[in-house]
Length: 512
Image (tube, rainbow, N blue to C red):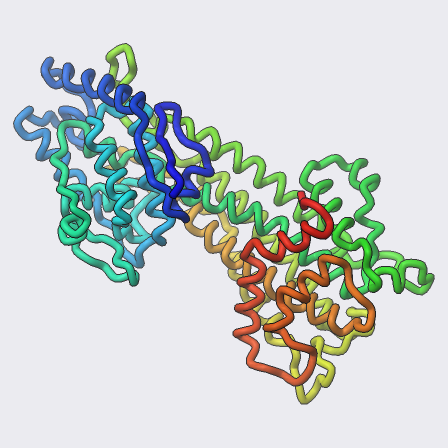
């Protein structure tokens, strides 16, 4: 079992993935404990002095000017968690909640939140005992961060609320804590607010999306190359000198990938010197690296935003080393919301151009002598006709999801929070766009494999042979129609997993 150590300097994206999607154990470095003890001592001094400080001795949001007596400040923190755990809807995936909890631990460990170490340790205990809070999908505006989702996590620390059961069912948090041998936490001043004020849900989803998008954008080069090969396309538009004169980094990487993927192919050799061959391929073929490359460059920008956020203090108020406690707006999710919306646009377009290549592969007037809908007996059989319908429907949904959430602010809290980021909505729908992109590229993979099968006895490229081997058992040989949904699911599993890329890279070296 791997171990992720939370330092007062933060954690890495790989750490978040190891905890969210794996079974990595979380530990707090001794220096982290020291940073939290030092920060907490400042809050204790403020309490003793009796001066009003937001979140320590006052109410929250529109109630920031309401003074709270010392004997009721612990009650205030518990009431805050209960009232803010107001989400509705289906539960968020386990991996999203685990990422969010680890990032909240990271935030507390930076030593600017004024909480006792035992609060961070309690979150770590939930992670290490695989106790995952039930966090409803609706509730966050990305305003003071992800208030409602984080409150649903914090409520479990109090022995209240709900936990996600092993089969996805909702179970009582008190029962789950007892089963794990854990005891509820009694919060002190400032600690409830510190548990819920921040961008951890948005950032967790963005980090998961970055990892998924990186894989999918490379696989988009693979499926594009296979489709171009099956359609007897040209490799010449992907020559490096043609992309050196338009030096967008992602475009050059995608073009280099596609060019290498098309080498050592008898299918490509069969028409390379044919004067009757098309002078120019369609945009969906020739411009594949321009679209996928732009998406890569967008991903680089998003990765930069996420890396900055990983070392940021996003709590409010923050405890400074000189003893001041200051209100900030660092919890506002605009940087993450903008980034997520931008990446959703890019990913939607990678899927849209993929569907256009599928349509060409199936169209007997444009596929360069492949049979209609890739069926050897079209008419009685429909081949992959309806697979393209499915892809078209997904493209349409992704276009709707690509509409930015971050421009859709709605004021809350009696106009105290009069501009919100909608960053939770932006990152949540980004995950849906990427899941849809997985399906779109799977349809292209299936269509390209079928097209290459129909080019026999010509042998395809090493990438084509790897794809045929990966999907061959499920796909079978071209012939009468079969129940198509299982085959599409098999293609999706191959596309989403690491094995096809690994098989290709064993033959041609690492892809960019």
